[in-house]
Length: 169
Length: 250
Image (cartoon, rainbow over all chains, first blue to last red):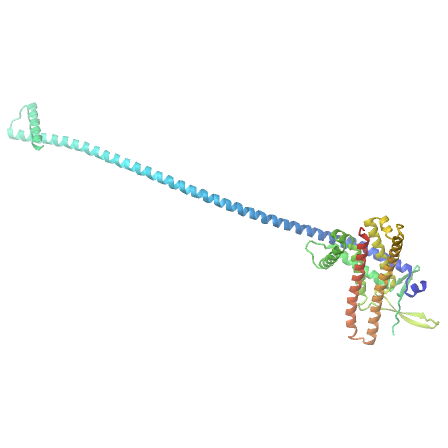
């Protein structure tokens, strides 16, 4: 056995040195290579998992937002229809009110116009009466050449005018 | 005709401690791996690049393989350093062995022949580490030792030793003894498999290089690259299998 080992060059000192060599390499690689790399792989894995979870959450939120958006749009649509319907109703009511008011106002205007016309006509009649009285007075004065007592004349004139009105009517 | 020696050539002796060319090559391998590890540890980033990418690819491939064997990622990560270090050490030393200069740069030494006549021997400065039985035997012993430590840690020292030494019944006692002997068989199988393949490859390359120096060694160099990888993988995979058996709760 010893001869065999000698032929193969096996020497316990070198064998021990090689084993120590390997152990040194093992501990150094474990500390400086494997541990940082394994830690990094774990960190990356957890970050990827977190990223995927966030993506799922975002997709879920997006779906929820879409549902909310649709609901809000539907609500807004309903509200808009209600507002339009209210506006139409209000407009119709306002139109009727305005029309009624306009009719009232036009009637008032017509009534006012009629009153003014009536007053004007009265005034004109009085004026015509006054003018006719003056004309008759002047005519009679010229025809008669004398100036009769004023009060009698006037009573005559008035009588004449009454007669004249009776004849006209 | 070059002199082919099974034993590694002694370069110098420091206080009675022999420094062989395979020991020097082992130091170079360790140095290369430590430099790589330092580079990686300094530049580990969440978005990998360069050396980190390569190392992460290697790590992930091994972890996937080990996860299938151990059944859990946690166990795979726990025993990954043992398996990965064996693989890296063996593959780098195997590939380093076929580089130009390894085995061809050295010095001539005056020796006394077997019958006393003087001779000159070429002593290379570097030699593929696994072509020395000291290296492969050390690796085998370390691997089997780590397998047993892992087993004792996982199931307890008492239960682990109980696999080898038990007096429950004669059959179990006998099987346990066989198991104990098989641990030594594992060391021998580990060391001689790797040593035999690498040494044979070295010899093959030397002979082909001597017979047809230009062109002919290229296919053999490619073969040695492949063999170097396969041997590293076999060593690492066997260690992994032995660990998975040792840590399993039966």
